[in-house]
Every structure is written in C-alpha cells, then in structure tokens.
Length: 279
Image 1 (cartoon, rainbow, N blue to C red):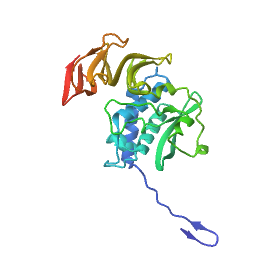
Image 2: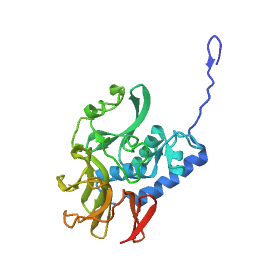
Image 3: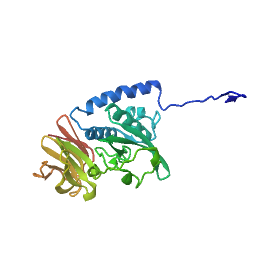
Image 4: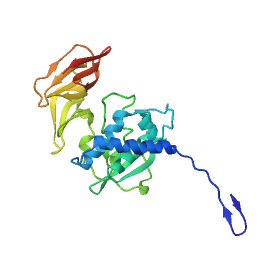
C-alpha cells in the first residue's frame, strides 16, 4: 500500500483455483452432463439426487492430482479431488438445473470442510457430496447419509457459523439417509439398508414408502432385464439375482463377488479377476 495525507492506494494479488481454459472446460462439460442426467419430467429432488450420484460415481477423494484438487475442473477432468472441488462442482451443476444453492464452509472436527445448501419448496437442506462418497472408493456405492439433511442432523459431525447461512429445519427427506448401493428401476429405488444390517430394501419414490425385499444382505446392486443382481453378504458375498418383487432369489456362483456393473448386454463383476456373464 501507499498513502499520504488525503489518499491511500492499496495493491493486492488474487490467486485462482482454475485457469480461464479450465473454467471454460467446466462450463462446457457441466452443460453436457446436465443434458445427459436430467429430464424435464424429473422433480427437483430427483435432479439434486442426479447431481449427487454423478459426482459420487465419477470421483475418488484424493489430493494427489495434477491440477488443484480444490477445483471443480480437477473433479471433472481427473475424477479426483477434495471437498472444495466436490462442492464447487455440485454448486455449478445445481445452478445450471435452476436449483437455488449455496456454497458453505465449516469444519469436521478441526479440519476445514466444504459442502452445499440447496433450497427445495422453500426449505433449505444440506448436501455433502464428499461425505456421500465412501473412502476408500467403492465402485457402485452411492450414499445418501448427507443428502438433504437438516441442521440438527448435520451438526452431529459438522460445524459452521450458523448465522452466516439460512436455517435448514425440514426432515422431509430423512428416508434417504439409510441408503447404500442404490439402483433405480422406474419409480422404485432398491438399496442396501444400513440401518437393517444392509438387507435389500425398496423405496417407492412417488409414495415415499419403504419395505424389505429379502432378508439377504446386499451390496453392489445393479438391475437388468427384470432382475436385480447383487453381492449376497448373507451367503459369502456370492453373486445373487432376485426379481424386484422379491421372488426367484438364486445364488449364481460360489465366489466372493464385488464391483458389479452392466454394459452392452453383459453383467461384469470381480472375484479373483474381472469376469462377465451374458444377460
């Protein structure tokens, strides 16, 4: 700074998380992603879940990146980053979807942390995409423990300067918080229920009702052509299939199986090696 009797001049330097080229990359790719994951018929809740699912499914938490792990660019381009990058990308995606959102900074313990607030039907909710992403990364695992959360629940392990942000008091979406390894089939969301020993449950998106599908403990849940496939942790993590109505449950192998995904008419999974099965 420079100053005299009647005048002062202050000089400053500004650093940025992204270059102009990286910012343009984020802008272009967020538009493309939004076009792919959203439909006009989706509710705002479904759009928020689509943002959460995309970020969690395509990102691993890490600070070992080429560009700044704090930027939305790195989360998009390198599929890795830390909480700030997760939250900034979510902020950009939600804004493009026309959903009012805020970037929030706070703490988990003594560590700085960042997440989002989103506004639905006049109510604010917390969304922490970072904490919905298991560490270490687990293929196919998308959590909702920190999806549309109220202040009271969030404050159990997060802290922030409450007066700096709008209050979040609604618990309307708490039924999402027990979900792990979800797979959507029409208006039904099948998931591993973490509050009931990871048994397979179904949530009806339209009615908000939840029920158990089977007593089997299910992880890595996928759907194809009338069948749900999962790793059955009640039976040695063996590959198992079941109809969405709970009928026809059948164990398909006798090996510990994980990382299920469906592609081009095949079910892929990992035992001691990557395998595939025609569907």
